[in-house]
Image (cartoon, rainbow, N blue to C red; front, side, top):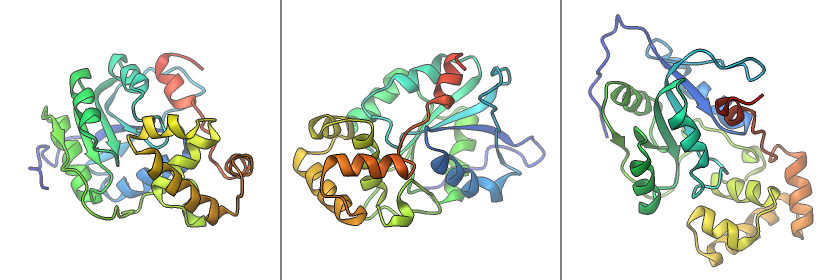
Length: 227
């Protein structure tokens, strides 16, 4: 999928804030966008200081954020500090896309997009277009992204499920939040348990807590006006 370059080269780069509760995810996106800093500049937002500056786009990464819970997106849409809000996700369930559109998001972008196409999509959103990526097909390439547990061999979906387990969600809740069937969730859990050497949910939670799977809500709370 391609987009017309909507911003002349002499204009300032688009200022993009990355929102996710996992530092490794944010760092991966920032690294992927870094070669395009003349077009897209990642905003460094200090969560210890009041949020005063306005960004062009708030890019919300849905990793382990309970994809059916739209609360975080609502926070961003209401914020006066984000001109546009874009969801960045693997999950293209039709209900999620429809809900995002009803709420007024300005883009719904796939993590399978190469960096160049992601930048073009962000430029299109900045130019006033509503952009929805084509649903991913086949295996999901990493394309330079990162997530907790990747270097231990966990796939992105296994990592998301382990993060939800670490948050205390049961299998039924995880299935509802990810729009996957209970049997699919069980299959992912068996696979991730094998990879991390866990034989029980308690062991999986302890492993998750020791390996970066505990979310840090500072970013989204900052957009709420909190600390």
